[in-house]
Length: 404
Image (cartoon, rainbow, N blue to C red; front, side, top):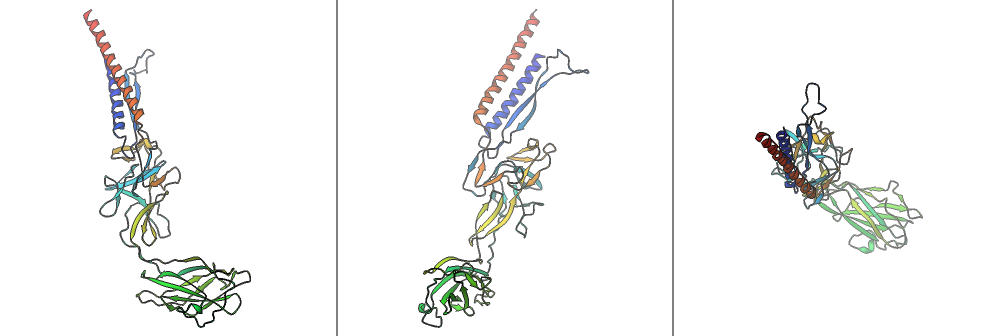
C-alpha cells in the first residue's frame, strides 16, 4: 500500500511540475492565462462508507484550472492590436466554429478581413442605417477598400463681426475687383455632388440704412443671385433675416455635377465695435476620401478614417463573457470554446454590463508571475523527492520483513 500511495504523490507532483513548466514557457505569450493544479485526497470506501481508521489511499489531480486574472496592458504602434481591460473575450470564427480569445494581435488577410495569427476572423456587430449596430447578429470585420463618396455642400455657417462704425462705400455697384466698392469679404471652399472644390466668397457692403448690410455671394467668381440684406438692432444682434439664414438660388457648375443649393447661416454674425472679425466659417460638404487609417474606440467601435476627414463605422466588437469562465475548453493558440460547464456566451459591447473596455494599439500580456512559478517549481520538486523517499522507506521495511 505505501508504494501505491507514494506513487500517487509522485504522479501528482509530476502533474504540478508540468503545469508550472507550461506556465513558465508561456510567460511571454500574448493573452495567456496561467493554470494551477488542484488536488484531492483519495480514500478507499467500503459498502458502508469510510472506516474510522481508514488511513487514505493517496492523492489525485482533481482539476487543472486556468486563472483569468488581468494581464499587463502593453502599448504598441499597431491600431489592429487590441486589448480588453476588464472581463470578456474577443469573438472569433473560422469554418463555422465560433471561439473566444484574449489575444488581440490582429492583422489583415488578402481580402481585407481582420484575422488573428491562426486565420480566425474577428467578429463584430454590423452597422445599421440609423447609426447604431445590429447586436442580434455577427459578421466578420472587413476594412473598406473603396473610396469614401463625396457630399455636396448644403449648409454654410458664416460667423463674422461687422464694424458698427463702417461707412457706405463711395463706389457703386459692387465690383469684386475694386475693394473700394465693398467693405469686407470672406471666402471658403465648398464641394459639388462629384466632390469638386469651388470657392464661395461673400462680400459685405454697408447699406445707407442704419445697422443694415448687403451680402453678395459669389462662386468661382460668378454672382449667385442678388445681394441680400442682413440687419441688426441697436445692441448689435441680428434681426433680419428672422430665421438667421439666407437661401441662395441654385447655382450651376461646369463639372457635370448637380447645381449647388446653398443655405448660409448668418445667425452667428454680429455688429459690434470698430473692427471686422471672422469667428467661424464652416460648411457640411467634403470631397472624395481615400482610406487613411483605422480607429477603435473604448467601446469597441471600429471606424475607417478617410483623407476627407470622414469616419465610417465598420462594426462594433462583439465581446463575450460566461457565467463560469473556468468551464471554457482551452484549444491552444490562445483560443477557447464554450462548453456545458461554461454556459452559453453572453455577447455584448465593451463597457456594458460586466464587460471591460477595449484599448486599441495595445496587447494584454500573460498573467504569469515568474517568481511565483519558480517557487511552485521548487515546491513540486520537494514533493516529488519526499514521495520518492517514502517509496525508499517502504522498500527498506519490506526487505527487513523478508529477511526475518
